[in-house]
Image: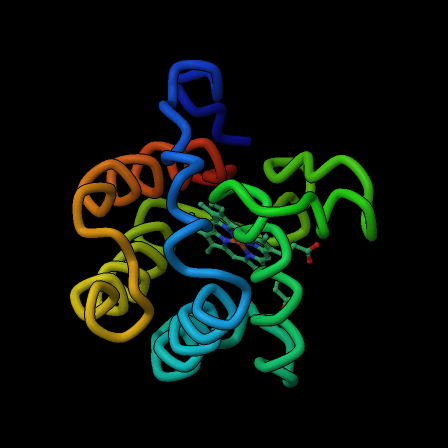
Length: 138
Ligand code: HEM
């Protein structure tokens, strides 16, 4: 078992202003495009067949994270993301692929989903740190 050399409290959360610029529809569209990238990636096999359902479930989490209503929390309880990722073996290579997929989507996020450009670097930083927290395998 790989234990990341960090604690989640050391990872700065993304700005909670982001949701106010984007709204539900743009967060959902961004996550659907992210899952389309995952679908084409070498880690596709980790994910369920129904990528749109998986994207929409993840979008509920990101809506809350970015400052919107706690939809994921209300529906599924405490996110406990590291624990929820334990059924999957996530190593450095998997983390890199996951991040590359998200970063490709973020390259177009200002124009496509009204992502506020002043918060883009902070969000990329958060994903980098939090994805390290998700690693559970060497
Ligand atoms: C480090 C690389 C990561 C990998 C390889 C990975 C992989 C996965 C997989 C395989 C699932 C299950 C999807 C399904 O049911 O089809 C999942 C779910 C999810 N992941 Fe990740 N993940 C990673 C990082 C992250 C990070 C950094 C976040 C948040 C910032 C995140 C948020 C989520 C959410 C919200 C779900 C849905 C949870 C649920 O099913 O209740 N993941 N992830």
